[in-house]
Amino acid sequence: MEASSLRFAAAARSLGEVARAAGLVVPSFRSPPRLEGVDRTMKRQVDAAGVEAVTVSVRIKGRPWVLVLADMIDGVLVANALSGPTAGAARTVMWAAVEADVMRGTHPEDAVGSSGPGARVRASRNSSRRAPQPAHQGQSKVA
Image 1 (cartoon, helix red, strand yellow):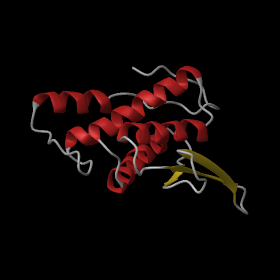
Image 2 (cartoon, one colour):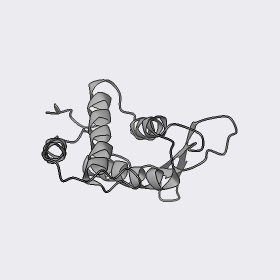
Image 3 (spheres, helix red, strand yellow):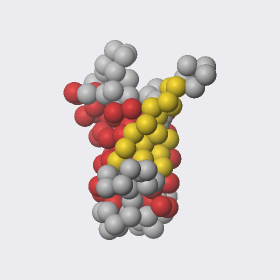
Image 4 (cartoon, helix red, strand yellow):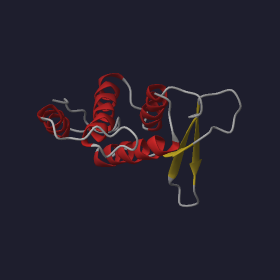
């Protein structure tokens, strides 16, 4: 399945919600990257108040959707300097959030509905997971 700007926007919202709930930095997402020939770039800026803003730029055109999602998720991990088990837990939660959107039918162009019992089980299982902790805070296990 090829990526589209509608899918990109919906995934950016979902990933932002997950990151925000976990107390992580929520990067901005844009497409395409300004550099030719690259699939993903990151830009960090500090405003006058000293607040850091991170922009993750991902190439959508001509790429499989799963690769675009992987770049977006990795961008959130890099923006928050997550590594090791914390990064693994965060990656799992973010993939589950994007998958849950598809199963609920809230993800554009991928809607399969949520009328089946399996979709409800997956959605409730995913929503019961604890969010990953930022690298600078104490780490907790993700159920």
